[in-house]
Length: 284
Image (cartoon, rainbow, N blue to C red; front, top):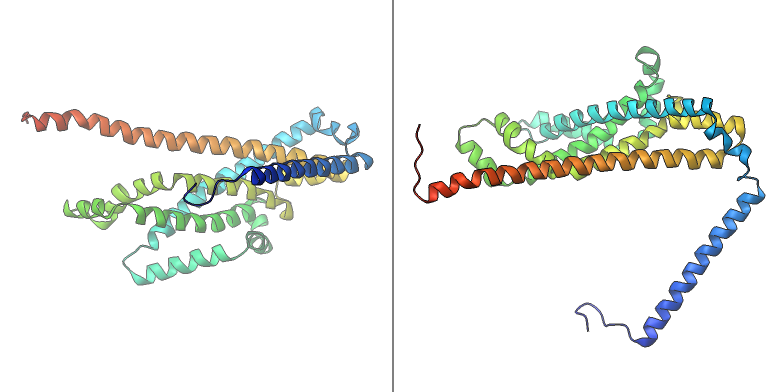
């Protein structure tokens, strides 16, 4: 008998097995019905898919991928700087600074991203700065506000004893933040930071609504010309999945490197501690 629940008996296991089989059969039938419906509507004919292996359109899609990555990289970098700045500002000793930082962060977190992008677009940033400016600014303000909370939580997660030890050494608050708290906060919150970077990459698809260059904008032109919405959606989704998986793998690699660097530093200090324990002396 388990602490939380009783172990299922023969009848219960049989009911669970039957329910599992029925569920699988139902899902298979549903998938078959969807495929049949799409086949009846000629969604699997070659003329709806061959555009994606046509050299000219492959070049267009390739340029769209580069445009999407350009917007994503710029937005991620700006979002990180925005998040660090306002995350630290929310922990300021000065009440007016905290109030301004809190207002900015909460406002841009509350406004739906699409409305924010369209609002910036109506201001005319696309004509004065560039067509991708409203998208980049909107992504930066929204995701930067989310990252501000991530960095604030990471800074607060640093053990209080380390902060007090840094103050005991005579460091000012700015130095403690720069040398002790912020680096450790980045290590602690790396998974959340990478997760938000993936969100930024996916949200670049909203450029579709302001005709910003990117995958979704090119996709709209393709399905309008070839009347292949389903095929276009599947191909674009596959590209986004590949890009997000690559970004996630990069995040895992960065986190692993940060963890390994911390481990190596601890190992390197061990001989010095051992020598001190045995009464070793050092010459100045």
